[in-house]
Length: 80
Image 1 (cartoon, rainbow, N blue to C red):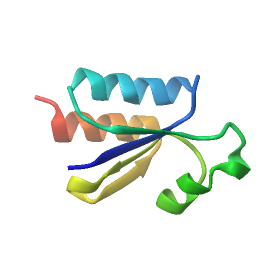
Image 2 (image 1 turned 45 degrees about the vertical axis):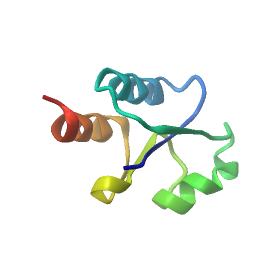
Image 3 (image 1 turned 90 degrees about the horizontal axis):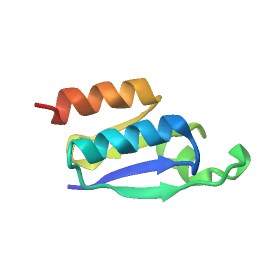
Image 4 (image 1 turned 135 degrees about the vertical axis):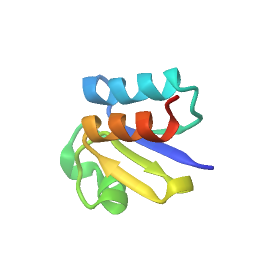
């Protein structure tokens, strides 16, 4: 099972998602992206856009952005 979180250092929305994943005791890989939107080619390749955070959850075939959507997904899928 592979989960990947694309995030930017100092991004409060990224931190919220990472914190929730830690609270849920989920294993995931962090991919730290460049601050310049134009340099976020990895993010664009997986999600079709360059904004972060982006979560890729291979176990469920899910790729999503927008922290609120990701938090809801995490709670629904992995919460108690």
